[in-house]
Length: 498
Image (cartoon, rainbow, N blue to C red; front, top):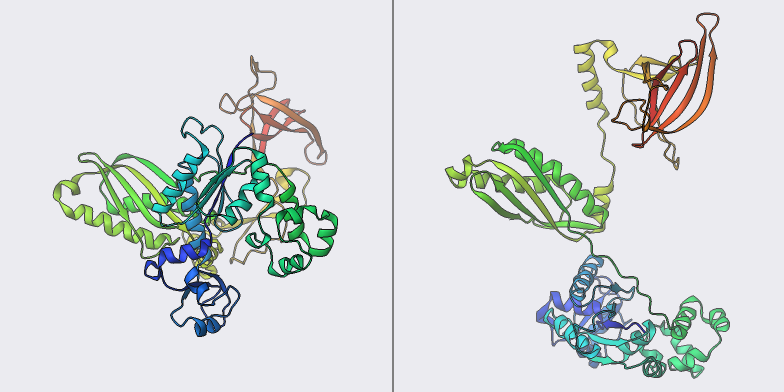
């Protein structure tokens, strides 16, 4: 069977809090839900527990029991950052790592590591020692099932390795329910029913457990009876980078900043999509005379504001150009940017994702300048009207003032058919090469599919029209709107679908 391991960092938020306040180690410490006197306590360390402080107490009540109690909150971004740090550390020992929903629980696949470690126990010792260098206390259990290793990791300290599934199963069944993540009200009722261990829980019928105690207890019962080992490893996110090679060595600061902005905007968008912010920006400049130069800028706080980052880049580039005459004359030929990311706050992501404010007054002033310079017909917009032919169904009218957009909510995106004001002659269908009809030449590829015809005829009262419209899909993937003029016996390109 495939082996896996469960890595448990007990009271993970408490360990993260102590990691940020090392002076609190050895003193009563607790993690609060909020930083206020009546906030409930979520986790406590052994020193606070010996003083009588328990999870669920109010902070003000706990201070009466332990006046020297240190307490603080652990924000979700800080917890996520610590989890990602531990995940990255575990990837040094196993390629497949899955962080669990429970804070501080990680699973790792051990398949294929037999030649790197003499035994699973050696692997567990190496992982625990490595996490200890980061300041985290960990319990590592190697076994064969998710629940078995999970249950034992909650009830033991240090490391433990099972030789076969039977040994793991026997150990997991004897684990008291008090060590598992069960709601206190459910655990108290189960104790009254003399259900105190995993073995007692497995003996209960699943249907009755679901009806009496709800979904959480039912899922725990299912997990305890399951024997699957499938992992859902989290793929390591690739670093956010950007590279630009300049055509000529660039020495002008303003033009360099413009290139930086073009590179930085997509990087910040990628960081925001991942829920992270820029903590530092590593810059590698390739100079045409001095070789590579590496710089790093670090904002005062993680940010997604491009203006703030560009200002720091400008100051750093000005410092480079004023450092020496030799550096000032050396032009930049290549730019490499690498973002150092940390979890972003909710306010940062909300600000970054908000739509930009449109100044209609400034837009109307810009349109007025265009009309003054190029005439009243320079600024127009399309308006539909009744017409027999496609090109006659659109008229252009002057734009006097801009109005706020009013899109229909929830309307799915549709393809847009762009129509030429004047149809363009296309290659005759009879001219076929060995690879098909090259309607627009070799650049677009041959036509692979032709949908139609859609007949448009009439106009005998002015000039007779007889067209057979088709949608032509080329090998490159373009969808063209073409028609065959039956009277003129020619093909025309009238638009394309985008």
